[in-house]
Image: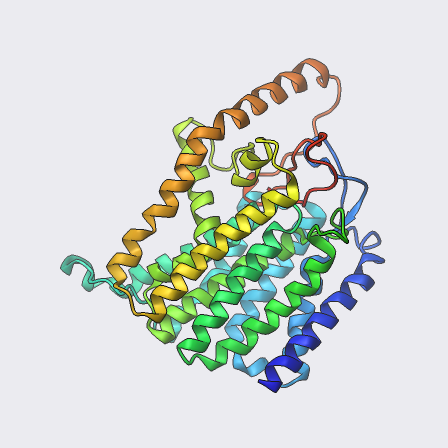
Length: 389
């Protein structure tokens, strides 16, 4: 316990210190976010939050002699994801290049050469038994890539992506400790502490009216990659049904899948930017940004608690899997009731852009899978919003 406390305090302090330092050099490194027609925040904001989090995490793990708790494939996948995110923050890579790099990182993180893969916990049809290993390996890889982008997509309001990561990491640490996965507990709580150091500067509170630093794509995508790695590792090595562990990340996963389905149904590209994210729909109901963040974090915490409790009492994997339809139904019902607001906003914004802004050369638009967007400011939603969709 003493080792856990000292490691966490070190990660928290180093993360906060690095943020203070990196804020002063972010502009020289071109790692800043400028407000524009899509990102309506106050002033130029550093995009170094993710770098600070993972630099602190790596330093504490290495200096205190715990880096070997994680395999080389983990560190390689983390570095690739972080590097691509940094380049993307600076130069806006194409969607194809980003996806290609993410698949490479996902393959490394899943490491099919290890000879093990995620556990279904549910009997597969006889026709799939002979191909279960490659099939489940592909599922794990797609999950990693999907969660990388899910975490980037929810990074659209102060404190949301970092807070969601903190919630997921907390429940993953509890599950790892319960299952005796000691090699995962310490890294998870150290990363949780590093995220905490970032949230001091990013999450709105009575002492912070707006975010002073953003995660950047480097931070949001790498958080998604690491959380996906922890989920797949717990399933692989602790023999927890993968579908049950999905409760820990249910909110970002369901929101992303919902967006893809709705865009395809509307005949649009799943990468097309719009205001259909859960946090957008809440903001469009005149709910303040801080309250919006807290609502989504509470939902994430509740889903994580259900998943963790189900694992602890060894609830039926079938029951836990089917029960995922409940948060899916709640999300879908809320979207059905509120999405008209977002649709009208998109149509109105398009009309204004065509009628009033035609003489202005259009700003480069990034595919939403890694894009930034923000909510228009008004009397109910003052201040600054985070950098990603």
